[in-house]
Each structure stands twice: as structure tokens, then as C-alpha cells.
Length: 428
Image (cartoon, rainbow, N blue to C red; front, side, top):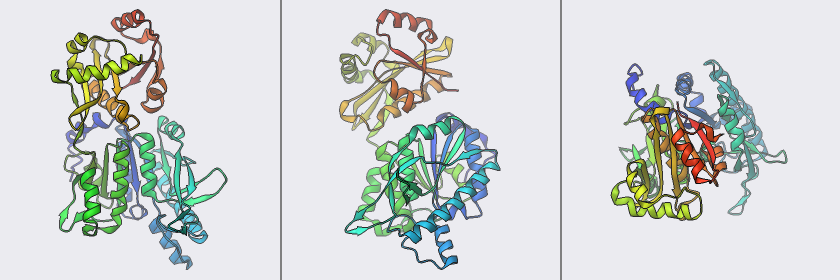
């Protein structure tokens, strides 16, 4: 367990997570637990460390309690089966109450919150010949709308209820919603907080799993995994990692300080799912020169990258980093430091065509940001002719003027004649 008095433990992790997004998925049973007030305090601490937070909540327990009180017969309580009209109405009432509990609780810690139409949803339809009626799925996330709240220090709260453009409401599964939100925001972490003990396979506690191991476990040893209600989180965790989320955590939300212990320590208290070990980002080495330059050449041929000679790349090899798949570099980037002006350039960002739209570009940018921060850099800039929207809408950069470039870089900029757009991002 993490001792909060040991601030050095927390501070070791702060630079890594600052200005990153955590999607926290709370089961309804966690919100009803005595530890809920402590969780709200933990969320407040995350925000004080400039970690962006989005909260997705369930309401399964509250739906069941409401049904018992009113004598209702439910078709399901968690949004994974058939939802008839009675169950939908009960779900709406219960979810609204949970949303208000979160808003009031977080307001007690001086945190601003908001809920809204962050998603467009559609009905699940007829599955295996069965009409699922008012059960829905997320069709699209309104990512710019979500980011507007985050940019104004407002925590979005997302209930397990969605609607389409024709005023139709649907019951959603909160685990699945959390994945869609995390993918749309390219979250650094997706954290599932359930009201159940740590995951086990038989008597063995499941602590760290890569995607391949998790898939194999679900396929071959599914009946051995306990508790059974956590299987949904394992399945959705796989989907999140494959979509580009870096880490998925499944923890017992009833444990005091459990959220902080999971985030700010190597050991954690729950189950961590991460990308397969054959994928990694690492500094480039001289042995990578041939592969690295082949990647850069493709970008230069498309006029996406500034032209560089092989000798120039070799001379600055220590500035470069590569993304490997099965020990083969398939993407790259570089960070050039301008220490006198406390600025750094993100340069030579390129991803092999075969691996596009897999979130690799964002991972490289985050890696570059961490490198720059570790060197004490306060501002990262980049130049782009064809990926301006990507840097602005996906990576959080802002448009800037060429006069904001370091003097030496401005000379190269003018000489190239490319008239690239300058983009900047504050790091500290």
C-alpha cells in the first residue's frame, strides 16, 4: 500500500502523467461503498497534479435497488442483455441519481464537473435472433466537445445512458462506454474500479498481463478466473489496449487509497493489462541507421519531412527514437533541444503506412514530451505541412508564428522555403 506521506514516491510519477488523461470507470457499487468519499479525495489529488480526469460510471447496483423497492421485474441491470422499457426507465432514474452524487461529491473538493451529450448511440438491434430493444452501443464520441471541458478544468461525468439524434434513449454498459471514451481521447490510462476482490486465476493473483496472455487466459482458462463479474473488464481492457490506450488497471474500488497506490507505485494493488512486449519505443542506435533513414526517406519523398542526408541523421542519431514491432523499427521521431531558450523541437515524426491509425503517432509524441520534460524543457514545437489537424486536435498543439522559433531554427526554416505551419505545446 502506498503511504501518502512519502511524497517522493508520488513525485517520481508526476512528470510522466502531467497533462495526460485518465479515464476512471466507477461501478455503481463502488459509489455506494463507504470508500467513495476517499475516492473523491483521490480524484482531487490527481487533478491537483495536473492529470486530466474523465469519469464514466455504472449504476447496476442502484438499478437493482430501485427495482426491489418498486417491485419491478428487470430484463438486465448492467446494459449487456435485453433492456425493456421498464428496465430502461429504472436505469435512467438510477443513473441520474448516481451522476448527481458524483457532481455533489466532487464539488465538495472544489472541482467543477459537467455531464452532457458526449456520445451518439445506436440500438444494439437484433443479436442472434433476439431483439435487444433499448440496449445500446456507442456509435461515436464527440471528442472536441469532451476536450472543451477538459481544457477548462472541468471533469466530464458520463452515465451509462445514451441517445441518438432522434430523442431515443438507450441503456449502455459502462465498461464498454469507458473504452470508447478512452480511445477517443487517447487516454494514458483506463482505470476500472469495481466492488470486488482482486482478480485471480485459481489461487494465483493476476497482477500484470500483456494482451496476448489476457486473450489466452480468457480463451483457455476462463472458468478459473475469479470473480466472474470482472470478466467484462478484462475483455474491454483488451479492446482498449489494442486501440492504443497504454495501460488498463482493474482494481478494488473499496480499498482505501487503492487508486493512488495503483497509479503511483510499481507494485500496484490490482491487475494491470499492457501492450504486448514485442512493441516498444527506445532511443535509436547506430545499428538502426539504415532502417531509420529508410523510414525518413519515405516521409521526405512525400514532402512530409524536411530533407536530411544520411550523414546528418547519423550525426544526430542520439536525438532520434524508434518504435519497434518484433524488433523492427516501424516508426520514428526525434527531439532536438534548444536549451538556451528552454525549447525543443519534435522532428522527423513518421509511421510506416502499414501501421497507420493504430495510435503509434500519439505514443511517439508522448514519448517525446517526456524526453523534453526530463531535460527541463518548457515548450515543445514542431513544423508540419500535412498533419496540422492531427497535431492540433489529437496531440494538443496550438498554432504559432515562425517568429516564435529559436533563432537558429528560424534561419533553417526561412532557408527551406517550405512555409511549414509552426505548432507549439506548453509542457510545464
